[in-house]
Image (cartoon, rainbow, N blue to C red; front, side, top):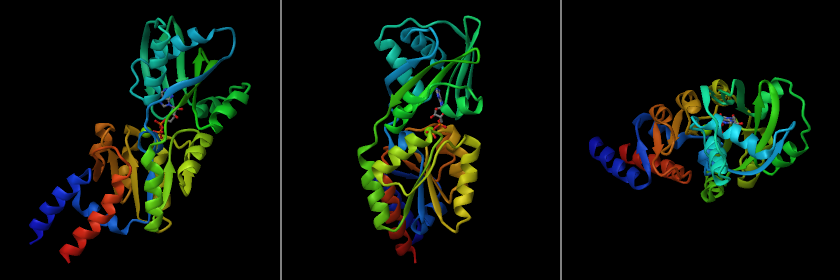
Length: 290
Ligand code: ADP
Ligand code: MG
């Protein structure tokens, strides 16, 4: 009777917005103690809009934005989309760029007019020990805005704040996990203040922010070492090793192919709420099989 049970639950899971790639991991889902969410694109819409800007030095805002949008032109990160959209809204001309290079979890760089141009995370600025007046940065971050910096030939040229929207279903999903005694955690490359803001809005229990891509899988190992069975959600190239390391890897459907190839389960509609279906379905399937 086993094949029948499997085919029935496959149809059922499709109805719940789930695509199950690995059966044994799916059946593990009934034992999960914690769900570790990535932030951008899973708990939030992943659609950034520019809200504030600041220039350092003598560049005006539009020139600063033109440089940033030019450099971001070949990037697939949702931050890049937000910056390019703002430049086109202002009808700004872009420059020509050479030598595009993406630094996963940090930002991008290229050569514009013979100058090295980077758009990078606050973590990179901190690491390079670049000094700046951080009043705006602190204000924007504590409002939950993601801030990136424009660096031209190793000196700071500007800061751009972008806002993303928290998904309406995020809080309800976490409330439901809590009812099942499952912890909700967040693992993100974004700034600590931004992560804390989002976490607090939706009731996340533990926050791990400013985690570089190669550290994400290590963080999952650490959490597993506490004796917890963990599921992890992710959408990016940078999430793939962590998805593999988790007991149950869950990719959001709108994510990259690499994330989906590393996942056991795919959320077809990219809706975090569909995670709840995993728990009820894996219990149902298990009960039928025993
Ligand atoms: P997440 O964990 O949310 O997927 P990422 O690892 O993709 O975050 O990115 C971490 C941080 O690196 C971002 O918050 C941003 O500061 C910076 N970053 C990544 N890609 C870009 C980009 N294309 N332009 C500017 N900054 C970027
Ligand atoms: Mg991501």
